[in-house]
Length: 218
Image 1 (spheres, helix red, strand yellow):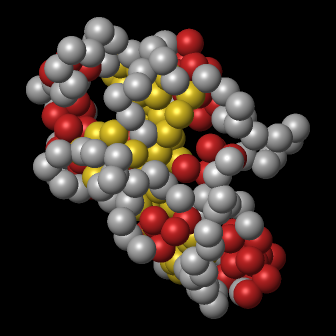
Image 2 (spheres, rainbow, N blue to C red):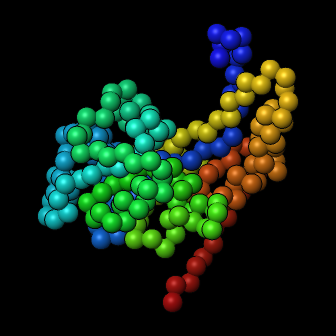
């Protein structure tokens, strides 16, 4: 684009989490960033290598496609610029297919954007009420339920969830027409509220207030 005389303008719109999903039959649902790295570089190939006693067999990692933003993220931010070396990695075509694969495969880990966990497009969520769960992730050396976090808006806001991505709008329209107007709408208070209401993405701008509530469990 720069070679054509068009310098793109990057606008930060939101943050989301890169989510790890697994089959509900797999009860080992907490994982460290270090173990994710070991899986991706091929050092770990079986669930029992991380969770002694696990009988889920080999770990299959599934992405939506080979050139997806999820692949770029893990190679750049988790593997330090190195390619994925684990041979037991599969690529499908869409995030919905990742969810379908994990739902049928107890030993799989699917890697998708957190917005797919409660997708409100079309006839409703592609992930809600499915045979999958979101794994909890920690930066610490050992993963426990108390120190691991899911990619919820609060944990993205507090930066306790370790796999956070920045979402940009890249605008190259030289006429400053409709694309510019739409991008500015998305960064406006109304557009940011729409992003906030997705439930999983965190808007870049906005008056975010935290409230403590007590929930009675019966």
